[in-house]
Amino acid sequence: MEEKKISEKESLEIISQMISRTKDRYIGNGNVLLLWGYLTVLVTVVIWALLAMTHNEMWNCLWYIIPVVGGIATFVMKRKNQGRKGVKNYSDKISSKIWTAVEYSCIVSMLFCCGFELINKDCWDMMFAFALIIVPFAEVVQGVVVREKSLTLGGVFGLHVGVFAMCCMIGGIKLDANWFLPLFVLAFICMMILPGHVLNLKSKRQ
Image (cartoon, rainbow, N blue to C red; front, side):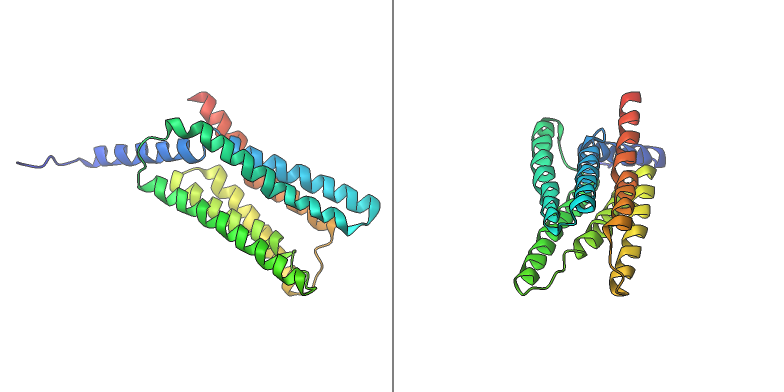
């Protein structure tokens, strides 16, 4: 039986449909990005204000709110969207593996920091580098996979802030809350909040 040949135009249409389905499945209408963006910004601003008013380092324990609340809320949102997933394509698998790797890396990084804490070595600044290097890098790759410029550009900005933070740590410059936390907030606005709203606008237009 003779196989049907697919034209170049048909191939491009199939690829475009795969990318569109992947974008809808893993990014949706931007709500997941907005969840993590606003949650991170809110917690950061609260910690920044409390540190400025009390100078008590114990307020840094509030950072745990981000992975706990964000993880639970993301799980709930994914469960609600399960019914419209359908068959996974190659782009879906890439996207899934990207964020699965980020999730496991976050858990391992936190365990390392806890381990060093037991021997009185404070390594928690490394989590800032994680949030501003691993996460934005994954976002850049995701943006390339689904052809979404807002994700790519936002991720690149966050990555640059992360490289700057890493240089400060290696160079012995303390990431002081008074100047670094506002920069951290700006990075997450560009990485999560702005792309989230862009995706929401595109979703409404469709």
